[in-house]
Image 1 (tube, rainbow, N blue to C red):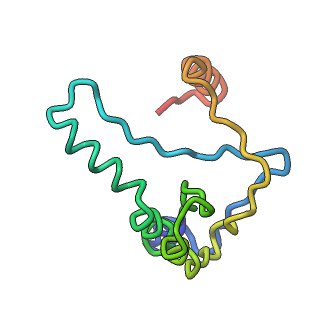
Image 2: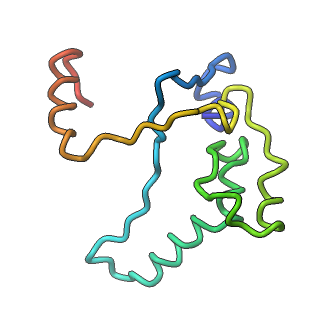
Image 3: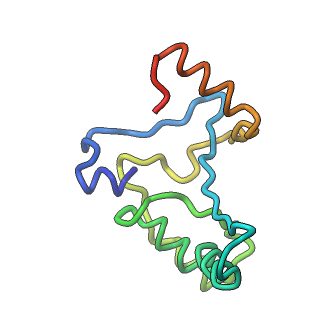
Length: 125
């Protein structure tokens, strides 16, 4: 969201919040299809995206502003230092604001969610 505010896609006054009973973690996934033409190259990309350098870059509010998925205690002191200077954008939650992470729904719920959304709001796209 911070990058979207800085691009003026969202208004500067927008703010994130964490619900007291838990929030979805909004996990991002990278997949390598079973029929990938270059699976080893795809694995290199996936590994890079999980590297401390790439995660620190993504955490920068001017880039994306998301908290890293890495566990700082598992990183070297040098790697941990990559994350110490990043302050969240005013529109974003402080990095430790979410006290309880709720798992995303199982994929089997997708059809029921789409149907419920369609019934309630009349649109699904």
